[in-house]
Structures are given as C-alpha cells and as structure tokens.
Amino acid sequence: MRKFIYKNENGQVCIEAADMDLTQLAAEIGTIVNELYSTLYQQEPEAADFFKTAVVMVFSHPDSPTWNVNEKRDGIALCAMGKKSK
View 1 (cartoon, rainbow, N blue to C red):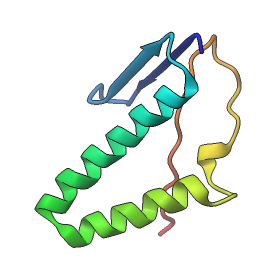
View 2 (view 1 turned 120 degrees about the vertical axis):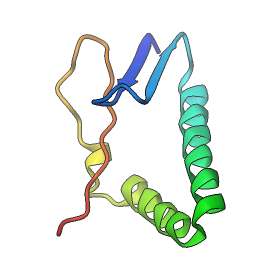
View 3 (view 1 turned 90 degrees about the vertical axis):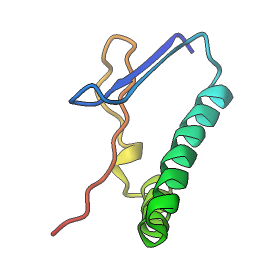
C-alpha cells in the first residue's frame, strides 16, 4: 500500500499511513473503533451498545456506503459512514 490519508471536516481525526500492509491498516481501524467503543461504554453503556450495532451494520450490510467505490483521488483513500434516515 502506498499511502492512506483520512481527515474529517473539522480536523479532529487524522489517520495517515505509508508503507503499511492491509492487515496493519485493518488492525489500526479496529483499534480506533475499540477506543471509541471503550470510551463510550465507560460513559454510557447503552449508547455503546447502539454504537457497536451500528458499526457492525455499516461494515457488514451489502448496501452500506462503506463499500461504495469512490472516484480515484491521486492515491488518497476516503472512508464513508452511512447515516440513519429520519
């Protein structure tokens, strides 16, 4: 893998990796999910359970936008998360 960059709109989250194999990248993403879940669970266990369910659905549902292929952007990969419809 050449390079992976993710930055959210307000700059609060930034993941940048170079020369990382795909297993390492998946492990890093798993670590981030674990940190979010653990922090949320300590503050509000019910919200953490909802978060866990939502993350599993976002990653496993065949229609999830997570697995949509975006137009190639000069070696930069972007992550997408779905939003619940109102």
